[in-house]
Length: 202
Length: 325
Image (tube, rainbow over all chains, first blue to last red; front, side):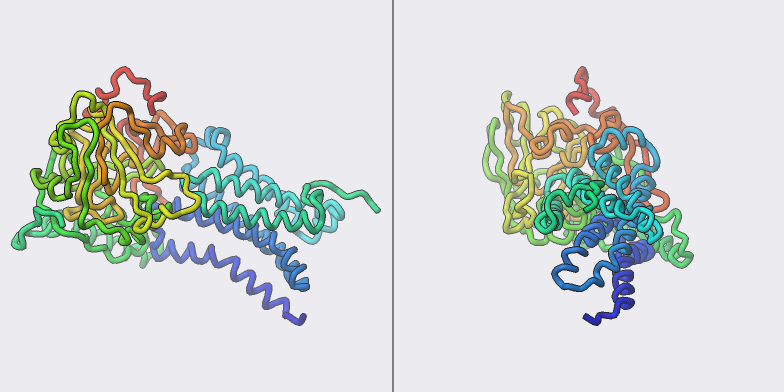
């Protein structure tokens, strides 16, 4: 298929920037409501989850559409997910915690523990996203990047454990994530979902 | 709907209080800072045009003993940032969807351990009373707070009219249940077992602070704030102040409350504001007084009993408040 790659990449870049741009616009126009810190933190977190899910859609989309262009934007989507996750963490520390109560927060609150673990898992993925690192890691690169599976599961738990009463939104995201992991298990075998497992040399 | 309408010759609330002055100041500040694009100290860079106070004007007496000098939370924040889960879990949902609820006519069923049970129309409930204005702090369990000028009647004046008997140890309240009017009651994945239920110990209900509100900012309650009639219990977390009440029951056993049923380790029956007892998911030591700014969050220290200890601490003498949270 002759879909030009550059415009496609620019489109994905612009779309990925949109949540951030909209937040900036909301801040400047003052439409974040009376508790802007909370609003910003939640919006950044949701964008991070959505972009993680977007990266997980790449492989299925490439298979369904027989177009390899999807693969070319996966790194960008993953780095955007990390960008939003980092901002989300900073926003939480600054706007919600005010840098107080750190020890209790990160040891006692289950949803914080889930979110923190997910973020820790994303750090090596962002750090090894360059072409040079891909070359250096070789056959180890792919198993390492399967850490995104436990990471997205932890993010979902992080989301679920904040629910007060209505979990409709969490259920919807959970179904999408379960589908994306399930379709991989179905296609490539369930062992392909295990991160860090390096297949034996044929 | 409500009687005691302000006569047409009377000045309206906004004409006689500093509220409009306050709103003007906000607009001025907002414009100033928007121009500068600095924003460090201001909640919102451009303030949406101040929302005019909606509803029917009410006639009331100010109550200096039940007031505070703290800055009131602006009307548009009080009415557009709400937890009213019958309309959705988003803070903006109640303002968006509460119009789907009809509050006229409205009646309240009174039952249980009392001499005068029955179904009372809203006007019958409020007619014998003079409205008061009470400016109370409202501390949400989610660690934000507001200051709201409520209009209403003391619960201690309302409840005795039903002649509760000696077995009436608790009073139970219930919110309207009508999935046709309250969209989130139709949600498939809600863990709330509707209707929303709350309760107070009889001595808590009869405390001078306990208030049945029918209005705010001088006019009838907006629907998203619990029209036409809601409880205000200012020394307890906001979820105790049940909205849109349709049932009052006097009973001997302690009622189970909605949040207690969902997560008993997080929300107790008493739910007194207490900085010493954390919510399992966050600290209760501080609160964001709304409106809060992005770069200068309006953090204040949370006070035990929300600062109303003088009036209510005696109710809990000898009780371990870490156990009865």
